Image (cartoon, rainbow over all chains, first blue to last red; front, side, top):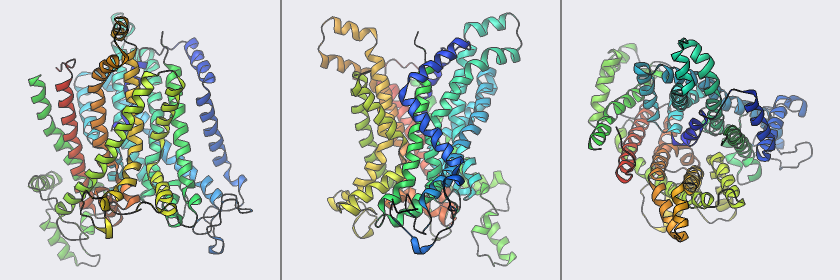
Length: 299
Length: 317
């Protein structure tokens, strides 16, 4: 799991620094705006998202429609700006439509894991005792698998398909999110203000609502964003192995696999889908890093 | 300390059992009756029932798990549905090949990561730090299966320097440490090293810059210790944590090399998994996952114990 754990400790230390006041969040926003790398990466992601949303307006071809007569045209061919693939389908069109699936399969598991793992982790951290024990021991079992192996094994057993890929990735990302939310919640629970609230007789639910949630959601969210980059790579990796979407629908990982036949004749085209995965993943990682730095106030 | 070591070793038993249970259940989350994967589609129902009884598939699940586990403990990982022969033998040679690739790639990544991370940590806040950290983020974000293709295009297709596929001349799967074999190892291990290199760089940088800003370093500077002496202190303080990260990286690569093995047709566990998935050979998928996960569990234990042994600051409960 170590691919997922490099940011955990950094995020846990956030819990003591994050405050709920407006001025704190204004400060975070100001620091983000000053961070050029994060701003540029964020802008790239937004442009990519918009291009994929408005894909039908940007191209006149259908993503699955091709002709052998015009297969593997090089990049820059008139009316095929990024060339054509091994079945003569327009690359630009397929990259735009393929990105929709890649982003969907890459991001959805992190959101699902954020909801499920966050809930379980907060429960484990706040309840402590036997509940904590039960949740954390089950988490340990899933930690005993290398993350990529777990994703491949589960979706390999379930069979190919988008939903199966999303399910297996969600299973991979829930345990690390549980661990982070548990340690963040435990840290907050033992802070003086939570102690004081308990002493004044506040109910458990109001302590969670007023003191715990606002202080732990930020750090957990930042950790979740750091998983999107990995998720994109593994999700496309699954379809690279034939475990994601089924042909002829486009998806970056699957395109990369089918285009392996073209590495001799059109190497540039064969690597285009990989560049898209790389670009997305890099940008998400830089944005996540920037977000963490902006939230980390060193007093 | 002794108590901790014993407890940590005993803890491996429930974890291994639970890991086995997850692997056992892989067959049962697969859609359809597991028997369908074992017999031809037009088998008469009577024969199907016989096969079912023969493999114990008519028993309740907990009993099935017991039967399966008893066999696994004796080294019987079942038979491949496609090849019809025991999985254990194939898995052993595949694991050896994966081990060679994962260790080479992992050690390369760790070496690069420690150097980059150390330099970035010492020069924290300068342009050197920013460049190295940016490189590390890029390294972590690389889809390595794509990088593998790019490597093949550059070094095999265009420059014709290194072989693109396999683990030995003429498709041989027997490994040997001579140039004829090593040249097959170069591209896959470089591809595999990029992600651990990035992760280790980030960890080491964080550690080194934390240690550098501690009071005792200021004291050492104040009493006039040379730069090399200070670096010596930093290394001693960073070593236990770095070691833990390194161990996890190496262990993770054993299971994480599946995509790279697929790109380079490296005859290891990753390719076995890939073939098993393609042919719906679920027993092979199950056995491979189990062996890799148990290896991961054991390596985690070893890393933990070594870390406890060399770091006097860790006093475990």
